[in-house]
Length: 595
Image 1 (tube, one colour):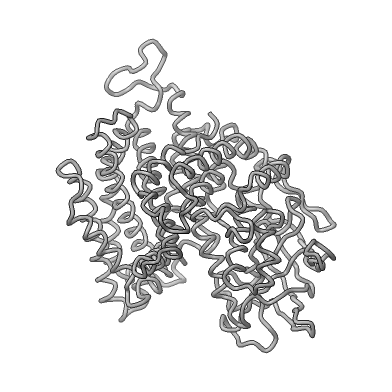
Image 2: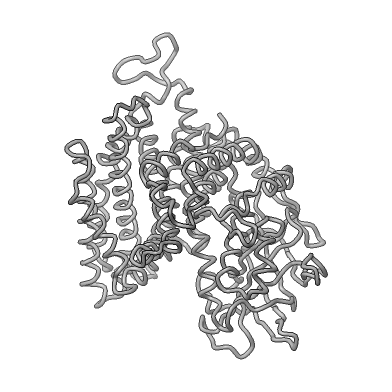
């Protein structure tokens, strides 16, 4: 069965749960009527299923090919698919109109990106990184830089990358050694080696715009002395076209577990010409613009790969005959029943469905708040949107990629031994999804960021706002008696999360390792609470349609899946709370030499 884009799910969430049309009066949503958005999603789904998905296995088997002239060839079909992608205008979906983009809200881009990643994650990473480069230049670049680079990135004519990691340092960017030497003409000479650069070299575009972190000679040590530079593969000439080759070289490709169709490069900058973006020694804030864009993108990958694996598991479970149902044959004319009748197979599929549907909603809910943070004329609404985007980014990245990998693993388990072979697609989904827990900041780092920075930011305003919103929803008790289990489940999850928060506030000050030991469980507790809030809203919308006489089985299935979430997934909040309150001592007690 080919990939089935979840366009119906997106339509339900955007139209009936999030109420996208409520924002039609805002200029940023002027071209995003729900009918227009649904047409965009239909076409994006078609492109993903018909163009990108057939190349997914090709990319996995062929990989990228490095040559001694420092060039990289992408897998068969990728170039033609990218040209079609550009011709259809997909790179500029969310870019500003003044730079040739379509200026659609970010929430629409998240939905499109999910379908691209589910169909072909390795391919989707090429334009995905360009969006991050666009965001960084848009936020910090000079007018001249914006006019030169943003139209090229928005059109997809040029691609972008982010060059952070070096052989001796990853997360601790304060250790980086790449140096920048100022020149008389205002440019810089950039020297240093960067590793694990996704899409660092390829044959898809006429130019590649590297965003490079480096330290200007004489700058302060540590993160305070880091600057950001534009270092293009080809130096733009007087007309803005690619000119002379810059001294940026791909020294080789990483041999990876997955995402073989994406070029993960070792990049050497050998006195390459670059230009400062923003102010000297202020590179990290701009890079985090790019990183946060990437982290939301990785969260999307978590859901996307899980959905692809889940779809493969459903097909296998419906067709694979083995054993008989415990309650009697369901396929009496056949030699055995399909394995989808077995409760343990159902458990794995229902876990996936319950988490996927709410995870997708959580992403869109957060992205919509991010749009309002930029676009709402109401200062309070805009502040809340920015708060939620900052607070939820590490949660979405870590929680959804952790759960996405587990869903892909369960999908392999549904396949049994067949899943462990390369004859079925689920092995690729599992391999491809594993990187999402690592890059753009490991999930452990995301948890530390949440507990160590995001909770306390602005006096805890973001978390308090989320608690207040959930409390107001619970107090309103939408949906009456039929929705009571969802409201009560949300209230219990929020209470567990609040108790964990208060416990951390009381104990982490006296022992910093308490926060470190609790951080991952706390993040998962927040993720589960977010999913509970999404299920309450989805169930209310579905029940409303049923009460109005709607007979589409989609809505009944939504309620059944939500009840499974309440019964089988949400009780995990109590376990996560208990682990938070266990403190650091059980984690830190064993001497290092006894491991």
